[in-house]
Length: 186
Image (cartoon, rainbow, N blue to C red):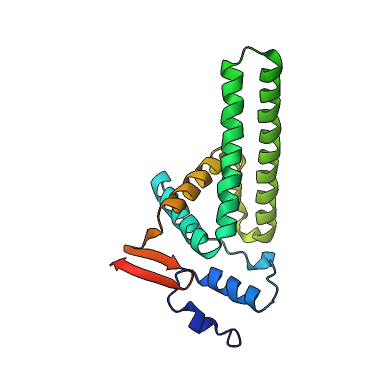
Protein backbone atom coordinates (compact mmCIF):
# COMPACT_ATOMS: atom_id res chain seq x y z
CA UNK A 1 0.00 0.00 0.00
CA UNK A 2 2.71 2.45 1.00
CA UNK A 3 5.23 1.33 -1.63
CA UNK A 4 2.69 1.82 -4.44
CA UNK A 5 1.61 5.21 -3.01
CA UNK A 6 -2.03 4.15 -3.02
CA UNK A 7 -3.13 6.93 -0.67
CA UNK A 8 -1.76 9.56 -3.09
CA UNK A 9 -3.20 7.76 -6.12
CA UNK A 10 -6.66 7.81 -4.56
CA UNK A 11 -6.69 11.63 -4.56
CA UNK A 12 -9.13 12.84 -7.21
CA UNK A 13 -10.49 9.39 -7.99
CA UNK A 14 -13.92 7.90 -7.45
CA UNK A 15 -13.10 4.19 -7.64
CA UNK A 16 -10.76 2.89 -4.98
CA UNK A 17 -10.68 -0.67 -6.35
CA UNK A 18 -9.96 0.27 -9.97
CA UNK A 19 -7.24 2.65 -8.76
CA UNK A 20 -5.60 -0.14 -6.76
CA UNK A 21 -5.95 -2.50 -9.73
CA UNK A 22 -4.21 0.00 -12.03
CA UNK A 23 -1.39 0.56 -9.51
CA UNK A 24 -0.89 -3.20 -9.13
CA UNK A 25 -0.72 -3.69 -12.90
CA UNK A 26 1.69 -0.77 -13.33
CA UNK A 27 3.94 -2.31 -10.66
CA UNK A 28 3.77 -5.72 -12.34
CA UNK A 29 2.16 -7.29 -9.28
CA UNK A 30 -0.38 -10.09 -9.58
CA UNK A 31 -4.00 -9.76 -8.55
CA UNK A 32 -5.39 -12.98 -7.16
CA UNK A 33 -8.98 -14.03 -6.57
CA UNK A 34 -9.46 -15.28 -3.03
CA UNK A 35 -12.92 -16.85 -2.57
CA UNK A 36 -12.77 -16.34 1.20
CA UNK A 37 -12.53 -12.59 0.53
CA UNK A 38 -16.05 -12.51 -0.93
CA UNK A 39 -18.32 -10.35 1.14
CA UNK A 40 -22.09 -10.54 1.15
CA UNK A 41 -23.85 -7.22 0.84
CA UNK A 42 -27.50 -8.10 1.28
CA UNK A 43 -30.01 -5.46 0.53
CA UNK A 44 -33.27 -4.74 -1.17
CA UNK A 45 -33.86 -2.53 -4.16
CA UNK A 46 -36.50 -2.02 -6.79
CA UNK A 47 -35.86 -2.19 -10.53
CA UNK A 48 -35.19 1.54 -10.85
CA UNK A 49 -32.65 1.50 -8.01
CA UNK A 50 -30.95 -1.56 -9.50
CA UNK A 51 -30.74 0.13 -12.88
CA UNK A 52 -29.28 3.29 -11.34
CA UNK A 53 -26.67 1.24 -9.45
CA UNK A 54 -25.65 -0.92 -12.41
CA UNK A 55 -25.47 2.07 -14.76
CA UNK A 56 -23.30 3.93 -12.25
CA UNK A 57 -20.99 0.90 -11.99
CA UNK A 58 -20.71 0.70 -15.79
CA UNK A 59 -19.93 4.42 -16.07
CA UNK A 60 -17.15 3.93 -13.54
CA UNK A 61 -15.94 0.88 -15.47
CA UNK A 62 -15.91 2.83 -18.75
CA UNK A 63 -13.60 5.46 -17.26
CA UNK A 64 -11.34 3.17 -15.22
CA UNK A 65 -11.31 -0.02 -17.34
CA UNK A 66 -12.46 0.90 -20.82
CA UNK A 67 -11.50 -2.51 -22.25
CA UNK A 68 -13.76 -4.26 -19.76
CA UNK A 69 -16.57 -1.81 -20.58
CA UNK A 70 -16.12 -2.45 -24.31
CA UNK A 71 -16.25 -6.21 -23.74
CA UNK A 72 -19.51 -5.76 -21.85
CA UNK A 73 -20.96 -3.57 -24.59
CA UNK A 74 -20.03 -6.01 -27.35
CA UNK A 75 -20.85 -9.20 -25.42
CA UNK A 76 -24.21 -8.06 -24.11
CA UNK A 77 -25.10 -6.48 -27.45
CA UNK A 78 -24.28 -9.71 -29.24
CA UNK A 79 -26.31 -11.79 -26.76
CA UNK A 80 -29.35 -9.51 -27.05
CA UNK A 81 -29.07 -9.35 -30.84
CA UNK A 82 -28.85 -13.13 -31.23
CA UNK A 83 -31.81 -13.76 -28.94
CA UNK A 84 -34.01 -11.10 -30.56
CA UNK A 85 -33.04 -12.21 -34.08
CA UNK A 86 -33.79 -15.83 -33.19
CA UNK A 87 -37.20 -14.90 -31.78
CA UNK A 88 -38.00 -12.83 -34.87
CA UNK A 89 -36.95 -15.67 -37.17
CA UNK A 90 -39.21 -18.08 -35.30
CA UNK A 91 -42.12 -15.63 -35.39
CA UNK A 92 -41.77 -14.29 -38.91
CA UNK A 93 -39.91 -16.82 -41.05
CA UNK A 94 -41.65 -19.20 -43.41
CA UNK A 95 -38.58 -21.42 -43.71
CA UNK A 96 -38.68 -24.52 -41.54
CA UNK A 97 -34.87 -24.86 -41.43
CA UNK A 98 -34.43 -21.25 -40.28
CA UNK A 99 -37.05 -21.68 -37.58
CA UNK A 100 -35.43 -24.90 -36.35
CA UNK A 101 -31.98 -23.26 -36.36
CA UNK A 102 -33.32 -20.27 -34.44
CA UNK A 103 -35.07 -22.52 -31.90
CA UNK A 104 -31.88 -24.56 -31.52
CA UNK A 105 -29.91 -21.33 -30.93
CA UNK A 106 -32.33 -20.14 -28.25
CA UNK A 107 -32.36 -23.57 -26.58
CA UNK A 108 -28.57 -23.93 -26.61
CA UNK A 109 -27.94 -20.40 -25.33
CA UNK A 110 -30.60 -20.91 -22.64
CA UNK A 111 -29.11 -24.19 -21.42
CA UNK A 112 -25.59 -22.80 -21.19
CA UNK A 113 -26.74 -19.53 -19.59
CA UNK A 114 -28.87 -21.30 -16.99
CA UNK A 115 -26.01 -23.71 -16.33
CA UNK A 116 -23.55 -20.86 -15.84
CA UNK A 117 -25.96 -19.17 -13.43
CA UNK A 118 -26.32 -22.39 -11.45
CA UNK A 119 -22.54 -22.95 -11.29
CA UNK A 120 -22.02 -19.33 -10.18
CA UNK A 121 -24.62 -19.69 -7.42
CA UNK A 122 -23.03 -22.95 -6.21
CA UNK A 123 -19.60 -21.30 -6.14
CA UNK A 124 -20.92 -18.40 -4.08
CA UNK A 125 -22.77 -20.77 -1.74
CA UNK A 126 -19.52 -22.69 -1.25
CA UNK A 127 -17.56 -19.49 -0.54
CA UNK A 128 -20.23 -17.96 1.74
CA UNK A 129 -21.63 -20.92 3.69
CA UNK A 130 -23.05 -18.66 6.43
CA UNK A 131 -25.39 -17.12 3.87
CA UNK A 132 -26.94 -20.39 2.70
CA UNK A 133 -30.57 -19.48 3.50
CA UNK A 134 -30.27 -16.09 1.76
CA UNK A 135 -28.68 -17.67 -1.30
CA UNK A 136 -31.26 -20.44 -1.34
CA UNK A 137 -33.99 -17.79 -1.64
CA UNK A 138 -32.19 -16.43 -4.69
CA UNK A 139 -32.25 -19.72 -6.56
CA UNK A 140 -35.20 -18.76 -8.76
CA UNK A 141 -33.96 -15.28 -9.63
CA UNK A 142 -30.40 -16.47 -10.20
CA UNK A 143 -31.57 -19.25 -12.51
CA UNK A 144 -33.95 -17.05 -14.55
CA UNK A 145 -32.61 -13.49 -14.59
CA UNK A 146 -29.77 -14.51 -16.91
CA UNK A 147 -32.34 -13.88 -19.62
CA UNK A 148 -32.72 -10.15 -18.87
CA UNK A 149 -29.33 -9.35 -17.34
CA UNK A 150 -27.57 -9.08 -20.73
CA UNK A 151 -30.21 -6.52 -21.77
CA UNK A 152 -29.55 -4.61 -18.54
CA UNK A 153 -25.78 -4.77 -19.17
CA UNK A 154 -26.32 -3.57 -22.73
CA UNK A 155 -28.45 -0.66 -21.49
CA UNK A 156 -25.80 0.15 -18.84
CA UNK A 157 -22.99 0.02 -21.39
CA UNK A 158 -24.83 2.27 -23.86
CA UNK A 159 -25.74 4.71 -21.08
CA UNK A 160 -22.08 4.78 -20.03
CA UNK A 161 -21.08 5.66 -23.59
CA UNK A 162 -23.38 8.69 -23.54
CA UNK A 163 -22.40 10.30 -20.23
CA UNK A 164 -19.69 10.35 -17.60
CA UNK A 165 -21.95 11.97 -15.02
CA UNK A 166 -23.36 9.95 -12.19
CA UNK A 167 -25.26 10.49 -8.99
CA UNK A 168 -24.12 8.67 -5.89
CA UNK A 169 -25.62 9.26 -2.46
CA UNK A 170 -27.09 12.58 -3.54
CA UNK A 171 -23.88 13.93 -5.08
CA UNK A 172 -23.46 14.40 -8.83
CA UNK A 173 -19.98 13.61 -10.17
CA UNK A 174 -18.32 14.05 -13.55
CA UNK A 175 -15.69 11.40 -14.25
CA UNK A 176 -13.08 13.27 -16.26
CA UNK A 177 -10.44 10.52 -16.20
CA UNK A 178 -9.20 7.73 -13.92
CA UNK A 179 -7.33 10.37 -11.93
CA UNK A 180 -9.80 13.26 -12.03
CA UNK A 181 -13.34 13.37 -10.67
CA UNK A 182 -15.25 16.63 -10.38
CA UNK A 183 -18.12 17.21 -7.96
CA UNK A 184 -20.88 18.93 -9.95
CA UNK A 185 -23.38 19.37 -7.10
CA UNK A 186 -23.95 18.33 -3.51
